[in-house]
Length: 406
DNA sequence: TGGGATGATTGGAT
DNA sequence: ATCCAATCATCCCA
Image 1 (cartoon, rainbow, N blue to C red):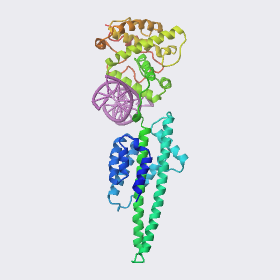
Image 2: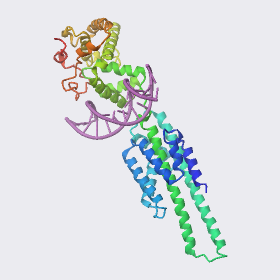
Image 3: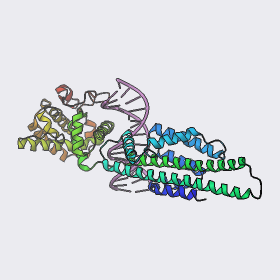
């Protein structure tokens, strides 16, 4: 019987062979139910991050299926689990009404997977794959049904022939037909199950962003860093700021949020490590501030935070942070009266930054002196609950004067 | 190839 | 809803 090879072919056609650590199992699992167990174990490892509900359903289905297959298929095939498989395939847009509905369901699935409407290329890829799976599923299903019918009639004919030589009761025929049907339905179940798996893998592969994490490009990182260090006193960009940053960096708002979340944590955890970076961006900020002021016109981009001076939002924290990083470099008190100063004062500060950084080789001593503005005794920024947003008013000179001044 | 860097996710707290 | 902290998964470089 060529059912197994057929199933195997289906798996191969699903294009899953590239999936890390799964290709082998996929092929194995088409071989026998024992393979299914192996396959699932591996699959579970790889997909433990898939949508919990979906994953649980799959777990349950698989467990039961494996058990029932193990039980020599005598147990009546649980309609419930078949139904669940069907439901799942339906929900995933595989066994849906038509192609249009299928892709819609795929889009819905993609959306529910937490992937924004952005990367449409990825989505079309995903949809294409899903359509492929869908097609294979349907043709295979049809083939199985056809094969089942053919085999049944074949056996019936055989029995009829045999009935000439020995008495064959209708019950026996019925029994044989029942066995055949059960056999085929169990194969069908495997197909459905494998299809479910394929969809799960597809999802985890295409929709689990973590799996295909890419570092942001240099420019994006620079923009984000610039913003972060120029708002060090309160690095909580408002929604609008996030949107703008996202646009500038060609990333989503949630990616911006993630980035800031990570940055805050990591900065706080190891301030010393980031000091050099902080100084660098402080200098950069001052440079762009200088150029902006020189041009007399200001852009509204958040990537050039100094420009925010027009809104009076980030400007103060800007100079304050810059001031802090200069302070941190030498530990000298540095005219704290300038907190919240204008762009011109930043340019002045820049001179100091540059001169200081020039002689900054070791960094250790400076690290110890470094006391980042905005981070309070609890290790948090002053007011994380009020997203810097438009009200940068960096908590006034009081908070900025900080510690190193004595 | 190992380990650090980094983007994403999760669970709990507010 | 947002943030933090821990953690995971992947990237990337020495």
